Length: 125
Image (cartoon, rainbow, N blue to C red):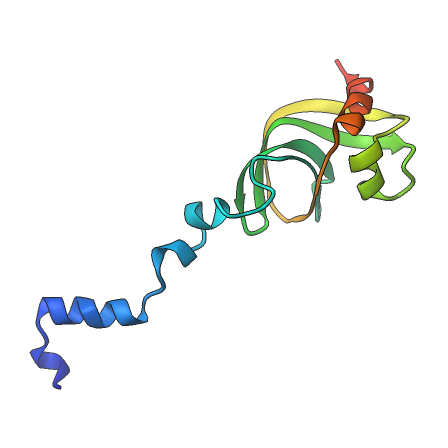
């Protein structure tokens, strides 16, 4: 086979043998399969702190939250964000951020209804 003699159809077929299938590409197709997509989670980032919100987009370490809160400080739960996501806080400072796009998200922990009730008490107006 001489590559210079290939037809366009043969070149497309050859290219298809070396291209990944569309479902394996990063982005929209990949984010649909992420187990945290659509869940309310506590998100720890590398440099932007701790946020709580509804995840509506994930692409690698990039996350977009809706109905988001920024957790500035907390009491109770010790240093474990897992406990804060499951049991909540006894005191603290949160503010509403609405929609927020985070990069370098390094931890996503689903929150419970019990924990969410405690956050509501400490949201600054």
